[in-house]
Image (cartoon, rainbow, N blue to C red; front, side):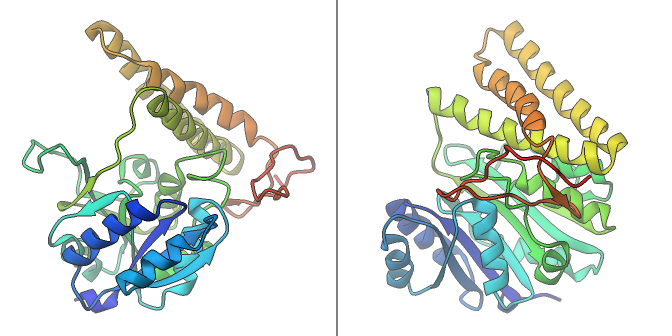
Length: 306
């Protein structure tokens, strides 16, 4: 049976030292002392991220810009068999690690996700979702990047997260769904633990909320574009599923008189993201981004690998 001593908790952060300070305090207060905690500084402009980690008494390492890049640095730096990811604006609740690691007693399980709630929500609210995911398409619903755990050796075999996707990149989302899908296609299972609860403390509103969804959409579009090229039938299925769901949410919001600008931005992002990666080189199941001088990927490329 796995134990907390098998765990490294990885927290990636960039230029958010105060948020990180509060996040680490919450993580350390709710995480067993036997677990390791590692901060990955994702190319912050100052040394404050490292200093916050030092003040909290946890290890830190530095990586390039982009959430997936930082997560991959965390995977290679960690030495324990299980890696757990959460964000610097999340507040895990008591027992979260214990709930996340129990399913790893089953050798078929390569990833476990938990429940993320807005900090104003109640964990007692009605909640119903599947506990186990075994098909590749179900990776779209398997969980959220703010609370997920993996077998480290499996992530290393898959090459880690896709560096071109996720926060900090133009394609600012879906790197979590991408890794779930890749795990499931490899024959592993993903388990969702409703008992593991993490509170999200940084809610965006207005234009920032719309822009956030635009980035999510770009990432989802990249996911569609990748699989249209690697497995066209599966790619069409992902694209249809995401488009149908988003259009249904827009229609429902219109009927109910609710705002839907963020959903419209998500939908537009899906199409834009799929188009943007049409020539991005792919090796295996990961994009291979060329890097511009400012550290951001450029998608203006020719001669892509099929």
